[in-house]
Image 1 (cartoon, rainbow, N blue to C red):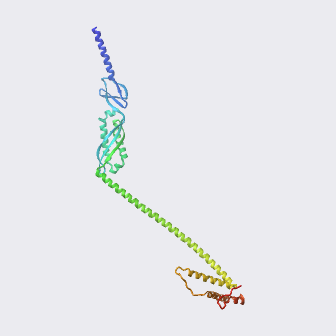
Image 2 (cartoon, rainbow, N blue to C red; image 1 turned 180 degrees about the vertical axis):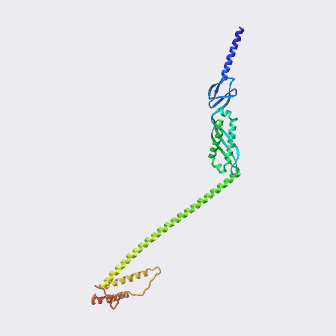
Length: 329
């Protein structure tokens, strides 16, 4: 009876020990992690997410590595730029572990190593740039930092996915100087734009005056051409009239020359009366004097061209005692 109870106790002890061994050999790895397995202190393999078995007392879990993308803040630090400007810079870094074994055994304190690597390279990149370049070329700084840090951390089984500069803070006095410089630059631009506007306005004004002068000259030329054409036609008309009168005189028509001289006389009197500086014109003369002169001119014409009209015509055109010329029936 005692032996049976002792055997039962042994069996129960073995069963309990086996259950404990099984529980010790079963490992559950959560999603997004990998566990490294060490056998007698040496790395053997990595456990993927899910249920896995290890040999109790021989294998053990070495490191639990986060395989998800992680973010790491780069602390604020003072950096001296190439033009000796002291600025405060901070940033943020994103990385992901691709090889759990390298991340566990190639470097000690992975996040601290990445942080220091980012700080030193940030200081190197900004130290090789002027302050204006650093403030205006953040994308270039981010790209250079990403390439350098990613290449340096490759042996650790990492992939640096992004590096971003958060703030670049110059000293207060430097910020004020930059504000004054920006104000002066904007005032300079305003003056230049104003001068350019005045210059353009003067150019447009000169072009307008030029076109106006050209059009005015063309107008004067056209007017002169038309005036010359009018004078030419008037001269032709006068020449034609003179020719007609001459032909009439040659034929013995004394009334034609009387009409011609009277017309010129009337035109001359019209011009004298229409003068701008003449308000009143006093000319003591009689109308019979004009008619008498016309008769005298007719007699002279008869003597020159001959007495073609006969004595009857001469008698009819001789002035009477009153100085008037009898009308011709």
